[in-house]
Amino acid sequence: DIQMTQSPSSLSASVGDRVTLTCRASQTISSFLNWYQQKPGKAPKLLISGTSSLQSWVPPRFSGSGSGKDFTLTISSLQPEDFATYYCQQSYSSPPVFGPGTKVDLK
Amino acid sequence: EEKLVESGGGLVQPGRSLRLSCAASGFTFDDYAMHWVRQVPGKGLEWVAGINWNSGSVAYADSVKGRFTISRDNAKNSLYLQMNTLRPEDTAFYYCAKSGLYASGSPFPSGDWFDPWGQGSLVTVSS
Image 1 (cartoon, rainbow over the protein chains, first blue to last red):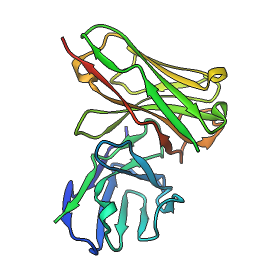
Image 2 (cartoon, rainbow over the protein chains, first blue to last red):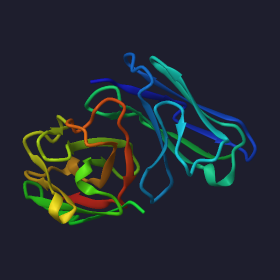
Image 3 (tube, one colour):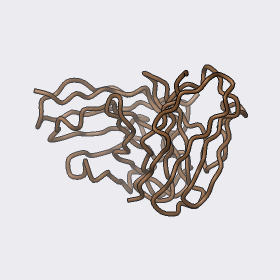
């Protein structure tokens, strides 16, 4: 199975900060990488599919990039509603595997 | 609006069985593969099982293979997870999730995603 890692595991940031989260696959997965946002007590929500395709509800301050093994999720100007845990997930092959998550909290 | 609602969770003793259900609405249920994903409270996400649109193909995580069975009833717009021989390490929130790709023959083809997710159902395995 493909293994996924994320860094950092947590980060503290302030409103307005530019934040970059990293996700790495154990083998090349082309651009088959999804990102999910999860807030406490809630189900995960699809944020980005196929490395860089934002869902309709996602504001343009979010962006995704990368290919092969290394991917990033960037929030250009962190807003209060963005404090959450973010998971990447490979969709190159079955089984689908999630990364361990990056928790973004308020500094 | 696409919506998924899980039910059937609860407290169960080790070695016993439990069946989860997921009611779908707001989309053509039999056009999409469906999945179960679980999350130990405070921990990360683990895909559990998937089933293609017509039940012709299923897939399981190694951790549940031989103990859990995923099924669906397209006439009732419902997804199920039969969990047998439950273990304490199966304690988790169980989410059902819809596949992003239309009418795939595989439970999880390349490029797929999970959207939307249900609100989750907590299964606690303890004596």
